[in-house]
Length: 351
Image 1 (cartoon, rainbow, N blue to C red):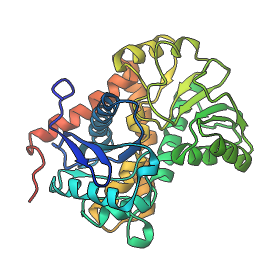
Image 2: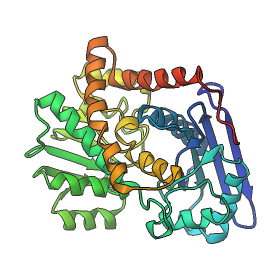
Image 3: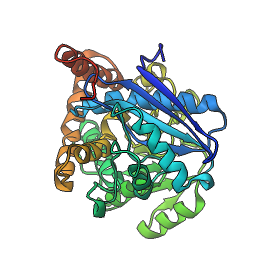
Image 4: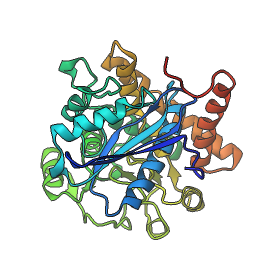
């Protein structure tokens, strides 16, 4: 907590329902900590702690660079998906409610809009509710659209045009976000390669969009123009980067760089344009933020997400001028906004 600058970490345990969860609130200068809940069967509790700390910190910068009045928060529920139940989710909702608005949740990996309904039975600090319930529904299509905007912006800087036709794009992970991204890419006549650890899912996407399936293992040493990681994080590391054969990396996964400083510099040294994940995957949080503020409008969420294109262009240009990595430039943009707002208000307070 001290090293990453967190304000609060809450460990949640409920034996009758089998709930074992962690809620991490990183920074609330801009507003309540906002970020999704991930349901994952972590190998160890330490892995879960590391993940929730990194994810919540990333949400601080994601929300800041997206121009939202929200701070950074994230939650993880530890366990196999077969333990998920109404009782477990409602108990988790009570833990969220006990924080009195300092953390607002939404769906993430392993969760869906229906799960948010159960959580919402116990707390009002939840977003991502089904549209029939007045919510914004699944934020994944908006997240994917933001990633798509980031890819096009990076292509504009790299190739002089944002036309993606004929480009070879590898989408690693075709879940909610990756699958929607594939849908957008095939409309531009790109050659899309896909992989996923879920064989049934990858075959379904391949059949639906006529894409080519590649080895699901973490092999990245084949020919491609653009690499779009959309699964779990840390695929950009000391083992994978030297073998990369692409010009652009732009995807929806969080925390793609295993070591932010080292691996951002490795990509820069290889001349690979990296569109920072917490910038281009911010469409989903923009969508749920608009739901949280009330009077949700899907069209406005897409319009706001489209701003990612220009922000990404500006960011890459800034990095070039200042001689820093795009990751460093993005962090600084986010930190600058937080620092400016610290002069206006203190940490988020429930009224």
